[in-house]
Length: 291
Length: 224
Image (cartoon, rainbow over all chains, first blue to last red; front, side, top):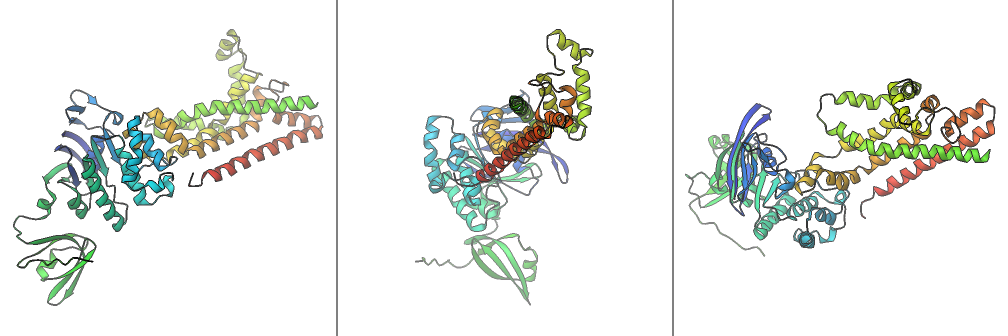
């Protein structure tokens, strides 16, 4: 159980705000911080890691105090049981994939498990390569495996997939989900991507200007309760075309394109690049297995 | 004559090696300070480090000579403790270290500035101390900057003339280095000997630089 109650003055583009984060993360939970940039998601993550100092409050992990503003306790990152995956991966350029992981290991047992982790992220073939020779997705996997070497109490992922192309992104989301299920490590993810959030997280924390505005399951968050559709999908609006008297809207759902007809008032609520829920009623979806 | 040539060359490279080694130990912490410190007076220190780039060597030599002289506070303190820096090899080392400082600090400083902050932070989150991070992660990844600094500082010390002339003079086996010897031989119209010194310096400097550039190119390869 990770209990966070901290304050921090944040300097944003719109001036400085007094952020206050009050959050409890359950053991083994996958929690996503979701919200606009500049809301304080990354700062919250960095404060948990000890890379930035909160102005006040407490951070407690399994009863161990990592930060207490009033008692002047502030464990350095080295003393916190964390695995941090940076946006730019932060792989050590002079070490091979295997050496990057070995560098993280603290004891013989962890050194022994390095090969298993490399296998888990499917990098056995590349274990002697230097980071500069790897693709973005491969670097990401190394960074993830390296963050897991020390069996951290919490895995912190700072927009780890944002620099990848959509297909690699999807593949890594699947892997991340699999690894989380297998290792059961408590995970905190910063993400801008709705599909990613729904797919991966147990709970979602909506962060807005330094506060957690809502904390709920992803489906609860994205589906208003009034809707009683039988089939619900979340898609990104690609195109809105006027075809008098109606509008034809093209959406990207997963990797499929869905087109639908809307009235002008319905269409006016949508923006290109925004997200929408597609909900169909009144009939049962038909599923046909693919060969 | 031949033995004098050899002892002069040995002295020249001894001075350059010792100077480079001392500089390496000074420059890494100094460059780290210049890159990472948020101190307000940092630019003053940065200016002092860069001064030898633009200052005439004779100016630095002149002030060092004054400082080393037994008439000054520093000089008299040192003389009382039996240390004589003016016209001695030790004095030359101090002068060379000061004069070649920017040549070692600048390449290391710019290499350090290019290391993404997340590399340091990644090592800290993996439980590594600042010292271990520096030794095992940062220094290996800025090795090109280190090599450039070593080569530049070494070559610059070998080629130094003004400071040495001011504080060292021309004492065989003590302060007579190659660049001084060339000047001395030309003054006494001994062109053959001057040429021997000059050509040796030329070849040695060329070889060192060539070796460094070749090695640098090789180590840029990907798979090990």
